[in-house]
Each structure stands twice: as structure tokens, then as C-alpha cells.
Amino acid sequence: MFVLIVGAGRVGSAVAKRALAAGHEVSVLDQDPLSHERLDAGQSQTWEDANGQFTVGTALEVDALIQAGIERADVFIASTAGDNTNLVIAQVAQKRFGVEKVIVRVMDPARADWYEEQGLQTISPTKHAIEMFESALAPEAG
Amino acid sequence: MYVIIAGAGKVGRNLARELIDKNHEITLIESSRASYLANEEEFEHAIQYGDATELWVLERAGIQRADLVIAVTGDDEDNILLCQVAKEKYLCDRIIARVNNPRNHDHFRLLGIQPAVSATDLILRLIEHEVPRYGLVHLLALEEERLEIIELEVTADAPVVGERVSDIALPEGSLIISVLRGGAGFVPKPDTVIQEGDEVLLVLDPGLEDAITTFFAPNGQHAAF
Image 1 (cartoon, rainbow over the protein chains, first blue to last red):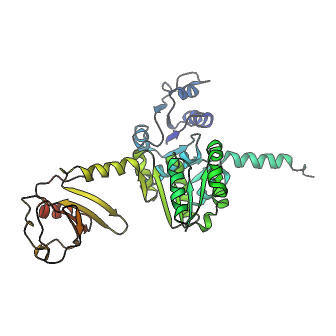
Image 2: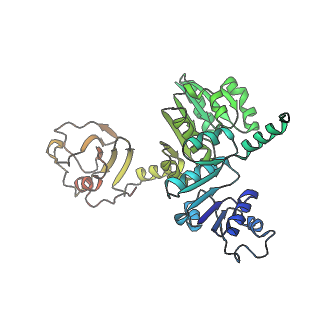
Image 3: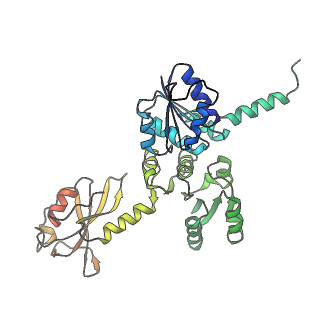
């Protein structure tokens, strides 16, 4: 599969490395050239030597998305730091480029729920954290 | 009318003042604490602090009863998102969005955020309007209604010069709605005679521009838009 990941922060870069290790073709787009370092960190070879692709550009620029290979992406992951950026580019990937599987990180649980209902696959780390805190607080079963 | 305005920058604040003057009820939503505090004294209860892309902030502002939502923050993603939510989740019929970077205009269009206004586009239109070498100016495009209004300056070699309006066989789907002559505009009657230098306003179905241009400005440059 060809996986395009936009936003190489902690989450995006880690997912990219795992996807590459799992044998997928992986392309990463980030506006900060230095974010490339995260892709190399802890690896025995550089991201490019491992056949990873890296493009510097802004997520909302269609040219950057095309350069990063969105037209042949099977999976699109939006994991920039901004919820709204993620939600807009995810819909661009889905509606303009027809990417089959689009996964979006949305910190705000309320918006994550609503956009999930609208047909986007959303992941809300905040929601998971809330649930985990809640179960950690709950009295031990039995 | 109840209007929610997201973004209390120069555009948002001035819109708010104008609308208040016209006796509309408004709520401004501002996400920067400093800007909120700076404007609180003037707008009092009509300004709220918060991120207008968060659902609870919109609900607190009364999005359910809003007649119009105007998104004029400095961030295009925010403007798109909050208009999308206003329209699709809260079924607000009327939205207006500001486009900060004209390159993002496609994203607004793709997600159905209309009208989306960009200062660059407005200035471009003004240039087209002010620069006479362009034969044809698009004044208004009603995309959903599939109609546009254009303006043409009648050139000396145009076949319509000296013709009465009733004698001009315009294509089906076009109509002369106004003539500007000597600084004044009027609605033409069937016996109005078109003169060189007249600025003619027409309403037409999209796609008829070239056919219309041959009547009024056969060698005029077509302002591609």
C-alpha cells in the first residue's frame, strides 16, 4: 500500500516508521524540514535509504500534496498539530483526490464525533486519554 | 437578524459595528484573550471569548438561532471548518467566509463554503472594472442560479452601434438590463439606440460570453475569469 502521512510530529513520524517497517510504501509531508530528523532517529539507516519519501511543504498547498504523491495514495493520514488543518486536508484527500482510506487525528472529541458521523475515520487521542483516566479512577472491579 | 461573527479583527469589528448600527443582533467570537479583552469594553455582552470552531463555543453563542454566520478569522482552515459545521450540523442557511490566501479558494469551493470572499479577488475584479482595455467584465456570477451579469463597453466597430435594442437579435438566454452612458445609467426601452462607448450590462446564461462579445465588442479582449 502507498501511505501518505501529513504532519511528521511524534505521532506522524512514529506511524511512518512503523508503516515502512511493515513493508508499505510511505511518503511524509511536513512544512518543517527539520522534522525529517524524527524519521531518522533511532533507525539504523536514513529515511531515504530505507526507501521512505519526504517532502517539505504546507498541507493546504495542493502542489505539495501532489508532489508527495497524493494522487496514488491508498491511505491518507492527517496528523498535523492543527485539528482544523487535519479536517480540511482529509476532506480534500477524500473528495478531490478520491483517496480510499482517510484517517484524521482530531484532538477535540466533540468535533471528532461529528466528523466521524460525516464519514471520516477520526482518531481522538484526547478521547482515549479521558477514557483511560476515567477507568484508572474507577474502583477496582470485584 | 441574528448574526454570529467569528474573528474580531479589523474586518470582524467593523462588520459588527455596521450591523449593530442597522439594528441587527450580533455576537462576535474571538479566540485571542488579548484581543477579546481589548474589545470587551466596546462590545460588552456582544463579544465572547473562545475558539469558534469548537462546537460548545458556537452553541453558547446561540448558533441554533443564527440567521447568518460570518467567518472572518485570519485562518482559512478555521473559516472553512466553522462554516461547514454551521451549515451542515446546525443547518444555518446563510454563511459568508473570508479567504485569506486566494490559493485556498479551491478548498472553500470543494467543501461547499459559498460565498467565500477574498480581498485579492475583489481587487482583481476592481482592476478588471477599471481597466478599459478589457472588453468584458464579470460583475456577478450567481453560480447556483446559473446566471451571470456582465458589463461590456460598446466598441466603434460593433454591429449593434446605431441599432435599436428591439432589433438586436441576442442569443436566447441573454438580456440587456441596463445601459451606462455619459456617467448615468438607465434601463433601456425597445427603441433605445445603442451608441459607441455605451457600457451595457447584460444578464445571461453561463457560456454565452463569447457570443455576446461579438455583438458589442467584436475585437475587444476577453477578460478571462
